Every structure is written in C-alpha cells, then in structure tokens.
Image 1 (tube, rainbow, N blue to C red):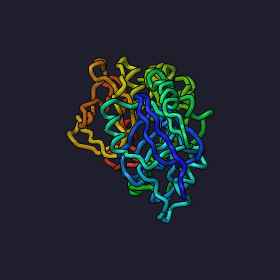
Image 2 (cartoon, rainbow, N blue to C red):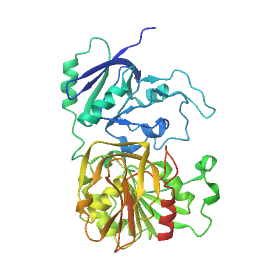
Image 3 (cartoon, one colour):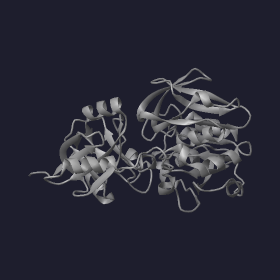
Image 4 (tube, one colour):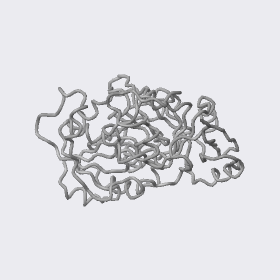
Length: 374
C-alpha cells in the first residue's frame, strides 16, 4: 500500500523526502538535533528536555520493542517530532502495550522515515543544530516549508521551563517503580531525607532514584522562590534537567543564588547550568550538543571514567567559573565542563543524567554523594 509522502525542510534550504509516520497529516517544527542511543527511544521522546526539538535517531531501526506505560519520563511525548531511517512495523517485547507508531498518534506527534539519518547527522555536525519543519502530504511546496523552518524561533534566548514545569507542588509517590528498580540492595534503609526538587522539566526516573536512596521528595514549580522552598524545611534541594537556554531562566537563577549555603544542593543538566550561572559563570550554545547514552566523562576528583547519558545543547564556560567554584568533571569527547562543585557551600552539579534513563549506571553514585552531603 502506498504511504503518504513527507518532507523534512531545513533552515539551510535543504529538503529531504521520506514517508509519513506518527500522526499522519500533522506537522511539527523545532530545532533538529540527533541522539546516538541505540535504545531508550521512549524515554528520549518523553524527556521534557527535548521540548521544542525534533529528534533524529542515528540508530537505523527504531520502535522494535514497542512502548509501555512504565518507561515514560513524563505525561506524554515532549519532543516536537521524530526522524528515523526505519520505524519498525513489528513490536516484540513482553512489556510492550502498543507500538511507537500508535504512541505518536496518541500524542499528535508527526515524524518522517525512509531518510538517510547518517547524512542528516553529518549536516548537523558540520553546520550545527538547524531549525526544521516536518510536513506530510503530496505536492508540498518545498520552498515554503524552508521559509517556515527559517521562521522557527531560535533556541538561544528561550526560557521553555514554563511549558514543562508542574503547575503546583506535589509529593512524589514511588510505589509504581519498585518492579523495575535496579540495585535494590542499595536502596536507602536509614532515616529518610526531605528533599525539594525544582522542576525545570524533571524526568520521573530522577524522582525514582532520589526515592530509592532514601529521599521523600516534594516537587515544586520552576518559579518557586527561595522562601517558598525553605518553607518546606528541606534537608536538600535538587535542581532538575530541562529545556531551552539556561541564561534565559532568570527567575530560577535568582532563586538558586538565594539558596546557596542554606541547604545542600545537587543539580543536573539545566540545573547544573543554573547553579553555575547563579555563582557568576556564563553559558554558551554548543554547535550540535551532546545527546546519547555513551558519552565519556572523567571525574577530576577521583580520576575515574564514567560512561554517561547526556542531553543538552548548552554548556558552562569553565574559564568564567569564580574562585568559589571548581570544575569536577570533564567531557572527554570535547573537553567541555561536565561538572562543578562549590568550595564555600555544600553544592555540586553535573552536565549529564546520573539517573541514566536510558543509559549506563556509572554515575548513580552521585545520588549517594547527595545523601552524604545532606
């Protein structure tokens, strides 16, 4: 049976033809990025950090193990669209409840398949992340689509946290996670710690790992003030991942600045960038970002190498770190800053995902470090 045509139009003037997948007839737009993970497509698509982005998977065969209700990282797909070489028509996994195609349909997300994703990645690596549009249908006007891609707002300067943060504070309940909890022997069995997690686009597996190690977590909106957070009398504060330009999240930067020294702080990804900005460092946009499940990071304090899960398009400039902040981790692919710690307050952060969903568990020790700090 003939498939509906689809076009991926890039801001650089290129158009790539393929076949429609996902919500047929829908349209999507955003910043085109690539992820090198071989699995974990469900976690990637539901990660709020991908808000405003169209994800290209470099692995050629996506969707073969379907989708289930346990592995989502939020309440639905947050990525704007999907680009794959081949979307598997067959689902084979005992945990699967439906196909990736049906999941895309449920969430109204459009995509394209039958394209050379290797070529797309080479373009993004040489020219940087590009704004794009994916449209479905016959006889599409390619030049019009290119013009619309060029009109997509740049990621630089965008505060996207209001689009993904919780609308009201809530207490995280972890009972549903026990079936798939890894390292159950390390589950916290001492006195529980009260933690406030600031939701800039938090993933559920972060909350599971915090609970696993003995934290009772209250999640608050990205706009929460320091006084509102301290009113919960937390023993620690967690700064979550999230989408957009960290320098544009000005409310959060001021809040974290007011919290430093008052409670132990642990941040990841956008939270890492916000902590760095709060102490006076600056951030910059990476050419094509770091997105995948096998990025090598060196812990400068121990000399150990971690294979990490990453998803970010901005980084902290280590040359701008003040005297009270030191770089603790470095990305071995490009020597960018992958972690900092303060030497005058109990606070540290990393530019990757220690909850590893998807990804290896090398960095899970950071949750233990947070517990010890508290």
